[in-house]
Structure formats: C-alpha cells, structure tokens
Length: 123
Image 1 (tube, rainbow, N blue to C red):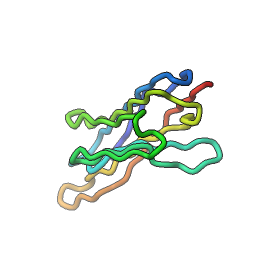
Image 2: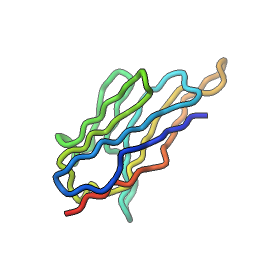
Image 3: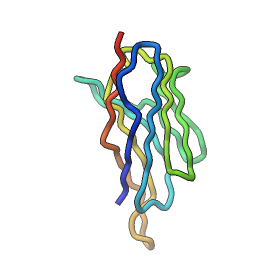
C-alpha cells in the first residue's frame, strides 16, 4: 500500500504565500513523478505542477513565475511553494504520485492520490 499525506493548506489573502507538502510512504521501490493538481467548485481537476524523477518540472501557464515545485528524494516528499496567490487559485489541491510498487518480483507503476487540502485565497 502507498499513502500520500498532504499538509499546508489554509486561508490567505491575495498576494500572500502558502507552502504545501506531500509525503509518500509505504511499499515504494521508486517514484517516477510527483505533482499537484487542483479542483475548484464546478470545474474539472487540473494539473498545477509536476516534477519527474530526473528533476524536470512542468507548470500550468496560470501559475508560472508564482509557484515552485520541489522534491526531497530522501523523504519521498514533494513541496509546492505558492507565492503571489490570487483568488482564482482557490481550490482543493491534491497530491499525485506515480510510483513503482507491489510485489518484489513483479512490481508495477501505480498512480496514487492524496486526500486533498483546501486552499482559499480571499480578495
């Protein structure tokens, strides 16, 4: 089993900052990629930022220059530093990890999600 535990959401005024953390634990042989998605009320879940095992990062256009994703490989933890927050960033943020897990002689890549953390930006 693989678990993702998120922390760091909350309420902040526009222009403020928040830092989200997501720690992966369980039977993990390696992590292929970790990322953050968000879902606002009435909207589909969208990718915010992603970091793959080699360190390459991807961001959705609306957060480029404001958000930074980073990873601590030793702790299997991914962070999302969010600066210059805007009301339109308000959403539930979900951590995602694609990991190699399972039986030792027949592992497989699996996608896992965290429980979500609320980020609310007031104007």
